[in-house]
Image (cartoon, rainbow, N blue to C red; front, side, top):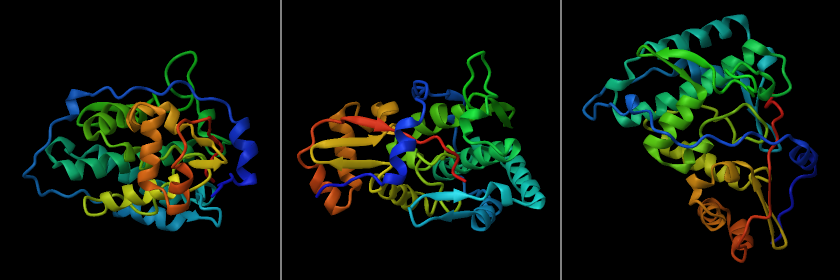
Amino acid sequence: MTRLPMLAFVAVFFLAPPAAAAPSADLWDRWTAHDPASTAQVDHAAWDGFLTRYLRTGEDGVARLAYGAVSDADKAALDGYLAALGGTPVSMLNRPEQQAYWINLYNALTVQVILTHHPVDSIRDIDISPGFFADGPWGKKLLSVEGEEVSLDDIEHRILRPIWQDPRIHYAVNCASIGCPNLQDRAFTPDNTETLLNDGARAYVNHPRGVSVDGDKLTVSSIYKWFKSDFGGSDAGVIEHLKQHAAPDLKAALAEIRRIDRDRYDWSLNE
């Protein structure tokens, strides 16, 4: 079966500017500490409530957040939630609690950054990262956790990716862009993380902005190019990963595919 990308996505995908080379996974040893015996739980109810009020998935399968509708009270509540996460002794948590903590922290921080600079057309327009050629907010230290200043890049590339070594992390952390896997409609918890990771993978792989096959030509999200090392390190590894999460029609279409022909990404704000 031939899968064609939605016409609505074609122009923005191929007109979108290329991103800089993605950072490699570089473990920050400071955050390897954990307590397997810990029963402490982090309260993510505030983030849950925020998502319930402002996140909606459209008929096109893309989750969008109503940044412009967020009330001052809910902005303050989000700030309070992030302050509480910053004050959490994360090194004393068990691994499942830590994973949910870092994913929620990344996503909530990203939303806070957008709200602070809204209105913007793209997160890449928020050039607050250090360096003359800064692009986006990812390198900016945004929060102190256990006395350590952390950035979005730190959370994704120095904590989540190297500690858990799970490619599905890319379906969990959201960069506030149409081309990104959907922001989940609920907070991650130790009880639902596995389900949400799998749901996110299936939703993205089986959506045109993730994967499309036209005859023998395979087009994928640029995520699979930028982070190829996380998906097996080769086109074959990426394709095998896609098959694991593909619906039957897509899996059949991928059966004879041996290489990736092109990639795309839409940096437009997920608003």
